Length: 577
Image (cartoon, rainbow, N blue to C red; front, side, top):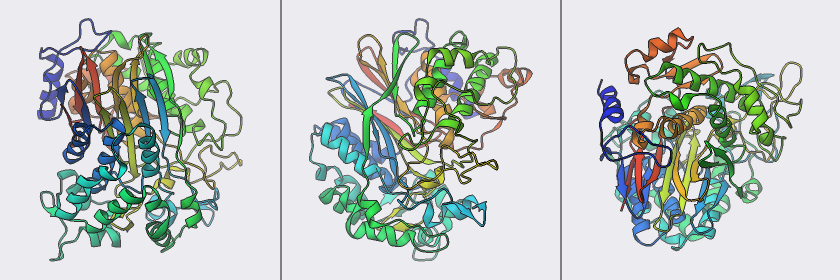
């Protein structure tokens, strides 16, 4: 009831905020001072107050958005280890205020060079998810720190070694366990019950740590000192790299990861993937194997509906969103993989003709049958339906510095506490379970996202930066964790802000709708009265969400001010100066 009332207030109470450019008669909402913030110079929105504070401190010291992102990642891996790790991976889009260019950086992990399509098969059958996720085979070569070093080298101002001090100090002196971390420590997740996790989360008296208590992590502090001094080589080469390799070679279903695989890792960069949306906006995001192209496809589909004339209290608007998502996921699940290994029809997927043809399947009156994938221009005949299991242990951050540069970055350890294996104070990722466990169909048709040596697994991560299409100036930046639902959560927020003209916080507060195949997952208690029944009459019967919840973080530019917001479903805050 409290959450529902908060949403009603966000939608109905008048204040001084509106959405730029297209918000002519926008509903108003007060800024939630506990989650959001308004500033004139710089802003940080991240998933933990300590991480937000670390990033803001860097900005006040003269650092750039790139500098702040390094400090935030270091802190999140300490205070939010269920979602982040220095052994994890990341996608980032970076806006350069001087050149108005948006660059996509890819720090996704890679499979060992000797990995084969049978990586997660045993006796001709796919491993169970629990067996796979806690095995050595689940861990890919870490990419987040290498990616951040690349970004820092191109856009940073402060010395790299100066950006880890806050996280290092808190690791040594102790940090307070939040409710979210406490729930993960004591939850049913298999990774929380491994020998490594049990040793880390058990106190001297034999009981597990609880929310509100203080933990220290001296081993992680030492790791940060090594990263500060050596950069990504501290993790990809030398003793820590050897510890990672040794750990993943242990137990059932061991990995074949080598020190050579670790040392060979390289992050990549390219121009961001951008489309013009609603005429007024240029929406930019990360490239495959991320979920960015899927998000852009969904946004383009929305232009062929009248969802912009609907609103959060209109069942038809929500059924349109659900149908858009189902069409988007049908294509995404079939075609998206690592572009270095498979041909992805990204250009055809986003082409006006293909989008218009697919949009004909969207109805205002009823939700149709389970949609199948289309065949966009450039698509080959080689792909079969995918069998990827996509859990969530992910986080998102947005930074705007005083020069106007922007980072929108989604970063992950993959599942809750990654693989549950630890070395040197941090959990190892289980990113390779984002590959399809079953590599082929019975007829031999391969999945685009099958495992191969050196390949990067498919991801739903889709950090967003929105620019004014005419001037190239920043309008908004946002993103979220949420496993495969990331794309849906981002779509909801974008439609909430730019179609339904809600303040950023109110858009984040909207119910999450995830429509994939024949399942419609949502948060029934957060809809206005009558909306759920109205959707049911249109053929959309929702069930309570079973996915990782959202953690939207973002910044909106309005009248020269930065308006930050953070998802009420998690513990993040937005703060600026």
